[in-house]
Amino acid sequence: MNLYLALLAAIISALYGGYNLFIKLSSEHINHTLGAAILQNSSLFVGLPILIYLQTQGKFIKVTQSGIILSITAGVLVGLAEILSFYFLEKVDASQGIPIIIGGSVIAGFILGIIVLHEALNPFKIMGILFIVMGILMVSIAPEKLLKIDLGYLNALMRNEPLSLP
Image 1: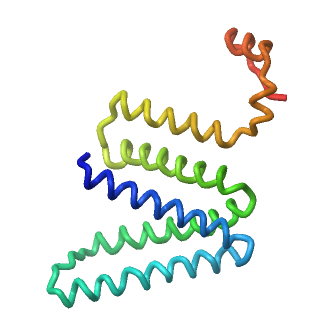
Image 2 (image 1 turned 60 degrees about the vertical axis):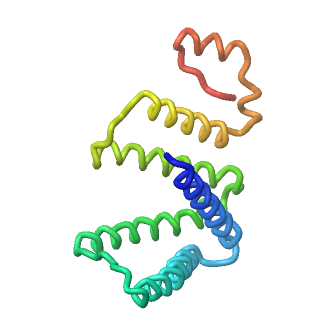
């Protein structure tokens, strides 16, 4: 990945972080479905002027029937995800919920890329996903439960015995 793409990815990540933050902030002040509908329409009002500008500049705007169907499918999925995000982020702290949602979506995208798109799998990708899984677990497990793990639990773990957190 070149520097331009890395910078673009950082900007997109920051925008998604802000997106999730504003879902969290609004989740206690609006019906979840209405909030998601307003969010979707806001996206339309950002994209539409850009398309109009491109058209007036004579830029080619590619469109196929498959592109439209796939875009509608993506819109339905993101709409459902947004409604559920409003509900989820109303119930958990942003510092916990946003990393779980974003990390989980990375894992889902990784799995779908392998299964549906037949993308190549290599040890570095697997290690990266394992780090994300560990990060999600570290963010989602309450610290007080982690601190209560004593040597008895570690010994049981080493002997492959089932264990439960207090």
